[in-house]
Image 1 (cartoon, one colour):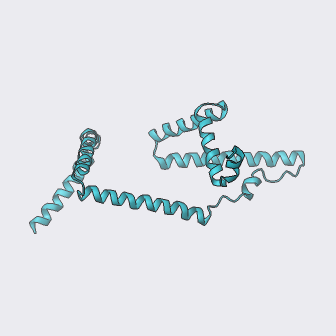
Image 2: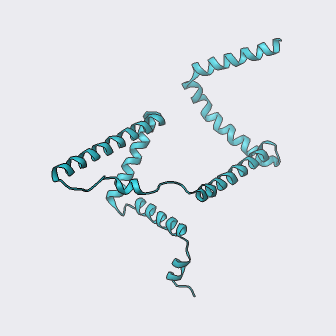
Image 3: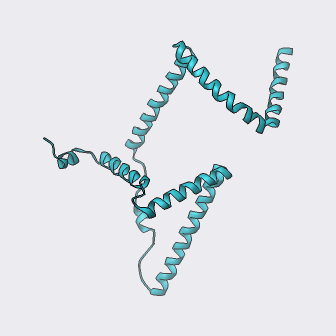
Length: 181
Protein backbone atom coordinates (compact mmCIF):
# COMPACT_ATOMS: atom_id res chain seq x y z
CA UNK A 1 0.00 0.00 0.00
CA UNK A 2 1.38 3.39 -1.03
CA UNK A 3 1.26 6.32 1.32
CA UNK A 4 0.92 9.92 0.22
CA UNK A 5 4.66 10.42 0.79
CA UNK A 6 5.44 7.47 -1.51
CA UNK A 7 3.33 9.03 -4.28
CA UNK A 8 5.08 12.37 -3.85
CA UNK A 9 8.54 10.83 -4.16
CA UNK A 10 7.53 8.80 -7.20
CA UNK A 11 6.25 11.92 -9.01
CA UNK A 12 8.67 13.67 -11.32
CA UNK A 13 9.54 17.32 -10.89
CA UNK A 14 7.43 18.34 -13.88
CA UNK A 15 4.41 16.45 -12.52
CA UNK A 16 4.77 18.27 -9.19
CA UNK A 17 5.08 21.61 -11.00
CA UNK A 18 1.91 20.88 -12.99
CA UNK A 19 0.06 19.91 -9.79
CA UNK A 20 1.30 23.08 -8.08
CA UNK A 21 0.31 25.16 -11.11
CA UNK A 22 -3.19 23.66 -11.11
CA UNK A 23 -3.57 24.39 -7.39
CA UNK A 24 -2.57 28.02 -8.03
CA UNK A 25 -5.20 28.33 -10.76
CA UNK A 26 -7.86 26.87 -8.47
CA UNK A 27 -6.83 29.30 -5.72
CA UNK A 28 -7.16 32.18 -8.18
CA UNK A 29 -10.56 31.12 -9.46
CA UNK A 30 -11.97 30.62 -5.95
CA UNK A 31 -10.65 34.00 -4.74
CA UNK A 32 -8.63 32.42 -1.91
CA UNK A 33 -6.02 35.21 -2.11
CA UNK A 34 -8.09 38.34 -2.68
CA UNK A 35 -5.19 40.63 -3.57
CA UNK A 36 -3.61 38.27 -6.12
CA UNK A 37 -6.96 37.31 -7.67
CA UNK A 38 -8.00 40.96 -7.86
CA UNK A 39 -4.79 41.88 -9.67
CA UNK A 40 -5.08 38.97 -12.11
CA UNK A 41 -8.78 39.56 -12.73
CA UNK A 42 -8.33 43.33 -13.12
CA UNK A 43 -5.34 42.97 -15.44
CA UNK A 44 -7.14 40.33 -17.53
CA UNK A 45 -10.27 42.45 -17.77
CA UNK A 46 -8.20 45.51 -18.69
CA UNK A 47 -6.39 43.47 -21.35
CA UNK A 48 -9.66 42.25 -22.87
CA UNK A 49 -11.14 45.75 -22.86
CA UNK A 50 -7.97 47.10 -24.45
CA UNK A 51 -8.10 44.44 -27.13
CA UNK A 52 -11.71 45.36 -27.91
CA UNK A 53 -10.66 48.97 -28.54
CA UNK A 54 -7.13 48.69 -29.96
CA UNK A 55 -5.25 46.23 -32.14
CA UNK A 56 -3.19 43.52 -30.48
CA UNK A 57 0.04 45.17 -31.65
CA UNK A 58 -0.97 48.46 -30.01
CA UNK A 59 -1.90 46.71 -26.76
CA UNK A 60 1.40 44.80 -26.68
CA UNK A 61 3.30 48.02 -27.43
CA UNK A 62 1.55 49.97 -24.68
CA UNK A 63 1.99 47.18 -22.13
CA UNK A 64 5.69 46.90 -23.01
CA UNK A 65 6.10 50.68 -22.79
CA UNK A 66 4.34 50.78 -19.39
CA UNK A 67 6.48 47.91 -18.09
CA UNK A 68 9.65 49.60 -19.34
CA UNK A 69 8.62 52.88 -17.73
CA UNK A 70 8.01 51.18 -14.38
CA UNK A 71 11.29 49.25 -14.43
CA UNK A 72 13.35 52.30 -15.45
CA UNK A 73 11.67 54.43 -12.77
CA UNK A 74 12.26 51.75 -10.13
CA UNK A 75 15.91 51.38 -11.19
CA UNK A 76 16.48 55.14 -10.96
CA UNK A 77 14.67 55.30 -7.60
CA UNK A 78 16.82 52.50 -6.16
CA UNK A 79 19.97 54.14 -7.55
CA UNK A 80 19.12 57.44 -5.87
CA UNK A 81 18.20 55.65 -2.63
CA UNK A 82 21.53 53.80 -2.68
CA UNK A 83 23.45 57.04 -3.30
CA UNK A 84 21.69 58.88 -0.46
CA UNK A 85 22.04 56.00 2.00
CA UNK A 86 25.53 55.16 0.72
CA UNK A 87 24.66 51.47 0.56
CA UNK A 88 25.92 48.79 -1.76
CA UNK A 89 22.67 46.89 -2.45
CA UNK A 90 23.53 46.43 -6.12
CA UNK A 91 21.16 46.18 -9.04
CA UNK A 92 17.49 45.86 -7.96
CA UNK A 93 16.80 43.30 -10.69
CA UNK A 94 19.98 41.26 -10.14
CA UNK A 95 17.96 38.21 -9.07
CA UNK A 96 16.16 38.20 -12.43
CA UNK A 97 19.26 39.07 -14.46
CA UNK A 98 21.12 36.09 -12.99
CA UNK A 99 18.24 33.68 -13.57
CA UNK A 100 18.24 31.67 -16.82
CA UNK A 101 14.91 32.08 -18.58
CA UNK A 102 15.93 30.10 -21.64
CA UNK A 103 14.01 27.12 -22.94
CA UNK A 104 15.92 23.85 -22.92
CA UNK A 105 16.26 22.01 -26.19
CA UNK A 106 14.55 18.92 -24.76
CA UNK A 107 11.54 21.02 -23.68
CA UNK A 108 11.40 22.65 -27.11
CA UNK A 109 11.58 19.24 -28.79
CA UNK A 110 8.90 17.86 -26.49
CA UNK A 111 6.43 20.66 -27.24
CA UNK A 112 7.46 20.79 -30.88
CA UNK A 113 6.78 17.08 -31.24
CA UNK A 114 3.44 17.46 -29.47
CA UNK A 115 2.46 20.38 -31.70
CA UNK A 116 3.54 18.44 -34.79
CA UNK A 117 1.44 15.44 -33.73
CA UNK A 118 -1.61 17.68 -33.22
CA UNK A 119 -1.03 19.41 -36.55
CA UNK A 120 -0.72 16.10 -38.40
CA UNK A 121 -3.86 14.83 -36.71
CA UNK A 122 -5.69 18.00 -37.75
CA UNK A 123 -4.53 17.64 -41.37
CA UNK A 124 -5.61 13.98 -41.41
CA UNK A 125 -9.06 14.87 -40.02
CA UNK A 126 -9.54 17.75 -42.49
CA UNK A 127 -8.52 15.49 -45.36
CA UNK A 128 -11.01 12.88 -44.15
CA UNK A 129 -13.81 15.46 -43.93
CA UNK A 130 -13.17 17.34 -47.17
CA UNK A 131 -12.53 14.25 -49.25
CA UNK A 132 -15.77 12.74 -47.89
CA UNK A 133 -14.41 9.57 -46.37
CA UNK A 134 -17.53 9.45 -44.20
CA UNK A 135 -20.55 11.12 -45.81
CA UNK A 136 -22.36 11.76 -42.50
CA UNK A 137 -19.37 13.51 -40.90
CA UNK A 138 -18.79 15.61 -44.02
CA UNK A 139 -22.46 16.64 -44.10
CA UNK A 140 -22.27 17.59 -40.42
CA UNK A 141 -19.28 19.81 -41.21
CA UNK A 142 -21.11 21.31 -44.21
CA UNK A 143 -24.16 22.21 -42.12
CA UNK A 144 -22.01 23.49 -39.26
CA UNK A 145 -19.98 25.79 -41.51
CA UNK A 146 -23.12 26.77 -43.41
CA UNK A 147 -24.92 27.73 -40.21
CA UNK A 148 -22.00 29.83 -39.00
CA UNK A 149 -21.70 31.44 -42.42
CA UNK A 150 -25.44 32.16 -42.61
CA UNK A 151 -25.35 34.01 -39.31
CA UNK A 152 -22.02 35.79 -39.73
CA UNK A 153 -21.72 36.64 -43.45
CA UNK A 154 -24.56 39.24 -43.53
CA UNK A 155 -23.07 41.11 -40.56
CA UNK A 156 -19.56 40.99 -42.02
CA UNK A 157 -20.84 42.13 -45.40
CA UNK A 158 -22.85 44.95 -43.85
CA UNK A 159 -19.82 46.25 -41.92
CA UNK A 160 -17.31 45.90 -44.76
CA UNK A 161 -19.49 46.23 -47.85
CA UNK A 162 -17.30 48.76 -49.65
CA UNK A 163 -14.10 46.69 -49.33
CA UNK A 164 -15.84 43.42 -50.20
CA UNK A 165 -17.52 44.93 -53.27
CA UNK A 166 -14.21 46.45 -54.37
CA UNK A 167 -12.31 43.14 -54.18
CA UNK A 168 -15.24 41.23 -55.65
CA UNK A 169 -15.13 43.60 -58.62
CA UNK A 170 -11.38 43.06 -59.06
CA UNK A 171 -11.72 39.27 -58.93
CA UNK A 172 -14.72 39.36 -61.29
CA UNK A 173 -12.75 41.50 -63.76
CA UNK A 174 -9.78 39.09 -63.63
CA UNK A 175 -12.06 36.11 -64.26
CA UNK A 176 -13.70 37.87 -67.25
CA UNK A 177 -10.26 38.74 -68.64
CA UNK A 178 -9.10 35.12 -68.32
CA UNK A 179 -12.22 33.72 -69.97
CA UNK A 180 -12.12 36.45 -72.62
CA UNK A 181 -8.70 35.28 -73.77
